Length: 528
Image (cartoon, rainbow, N blue to C red):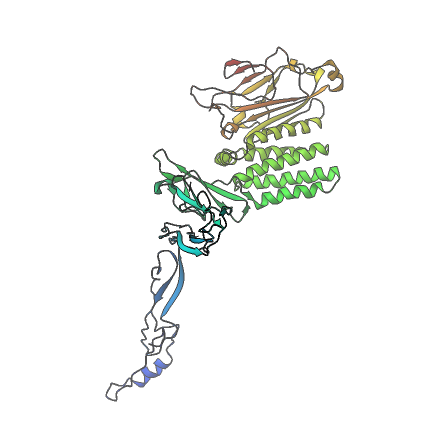
């Protein structure tokens, strides 16, 4: 053997051996030999040489040459391997501090020094041995009375939990054998780190999930990681305690992760606003809406992208309002299709995650209301625009106050193109004609036109924040909004909402008509 290569030589042939016929010998000369015919296949890689951290693996092969030729290449290979388990790290004593000054300036005294222990990790052991030392010291005699120096800093705590001790000292300066010693003590000790150390079963072990390492974390705390490469921000994961007192990992939260594409789209809004001209800014917002529609239709977004989408829609709506820009019909349809995509039932868990940091669904409802009135003010009198999507049905009407002759029903179930879930439901709202009366007669002259918006949400109840009294929303949700604010009358706003589940519970309906009476909600009478 030379290094990792085996050298094989061909032995001399005896004259007594049987000779091979010349024809066969000639044929053998021209027999094709491809590859390393004398080398067997590599063996499997050996197990890693260590159980944690970085080690090595080896594999071998054997040289078997039927042609009597030498084998080329190595017979043994090695490579680095990394065991995912982290090696225990024991606590290590740091260097001793310098000796303190002598406790007295005259005669015999003491000096102290201390050292710190670095924290153990991954199951390693704590430091052993003393953390402080003292020794005698001697200073020449003097005749002055002693004076205390300032207290030194508190030392580090001797333990990180379950109660430890820390101390500080001061020295008496100038006291001689013939003089007066300082009164009082030169050392103070106090308790520290009195919080209870968590038991092993109260700590979530290190875990590898979603291509991220979640470090060992006590129950009640959060572990943090960077968001995946296609997003910015941080993701968190809570270590909780079960009813049996055992720690367990909850699912990671991506409420603060925003995809790069959504972040770039938000930045592009500033670029459009920088153009200065109102029309250009409005056109730019329409382009932003188209891009956001494409992103939300992919459905591969994080919980933080839901909140970013609501923020983008808010910026778009505010820009339309400031620029007095009325979006085209396709832009209005795109807006409500985005809302429908965000409110898809598949996003329920993402909304629950997102609303731990911000009530985005409530903000979304307010944005929709503002958008409705921007669109409505640009419509012709008596014009009615219906927007029908998979999760939202909306109606926008512009109505002269003095010309509303009949009550208004929503939704119009027989309207062409009405989605099945709205057509076949029992949910409806009846808005009486008497409601279209301004608060004052003066407003009848100056603001004689109302913008009426009505929105039926298919499953908004699934993603609303949990109510404080744990009330259950057991119906679809209808929102009605009218601007300018109408005068309160004795008429009733009728809302009928079918139960989604046959259970005994409290039912809610949401209406943006504040201080306006509701006649029927799920066959129960309520006054708002």
